[in-house]
Image 1 (tube, one colour):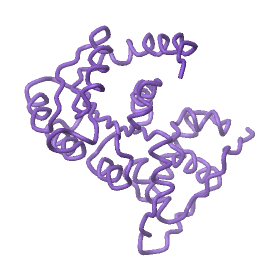
Image 2 (cartoon, one colour):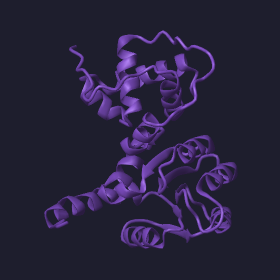
Image 3 (cartoon, one colour):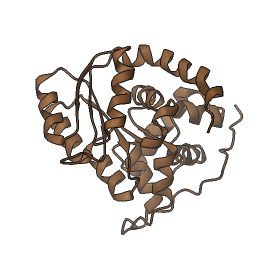
Image 4 (tube, one colour):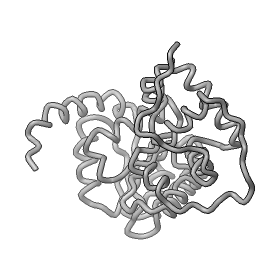
Length: 241
């Protein structure tokens, strides 16, 4: 594949990454040494990369001895695993932002990462297309990001039903917002597609989480899929003010 035409977009993504990543103190952990090398190359010209490891134990040691505020890890490590690392890392530093790059997009891996407290879940294959920057921006504005590939894995998985019928009483607008969440859209993307203000979307997201008794967007997504609360049309309907 000839990517020459995409070079300007790649350079623009790198330029925009400087302000977002430059204020982060980052530790990266992955069994994928090519991924580590590429991230190191980016951070060397942008912001402080405090540690790069291939194992859970070494990553935890880095986090214990550095003032890191961002952990980027993959689900696969040379020893240990990503969800276990995130769970222990957030015990050490409750304010730590954790972004996991999923190499094996299995439902069990995604659910484990969500339960561990990851604020961002991205497909490893999308990292080079600006999704890392997009994920960090979405986490800042929405507190959590799940990219469309990961959302699609959950949507097509055979999730066990919750065991009791769920009738959350969502309004039509809240159902539309829930569909957007289940497609892996950020608040801004939902607002753009529904022709709503960002504040209206944030209010609707809060209402959805409350009615579903969900702690965050990822749990709301799992609840929705388990209880058949959403059918996902290709485009979301636009609301007329």
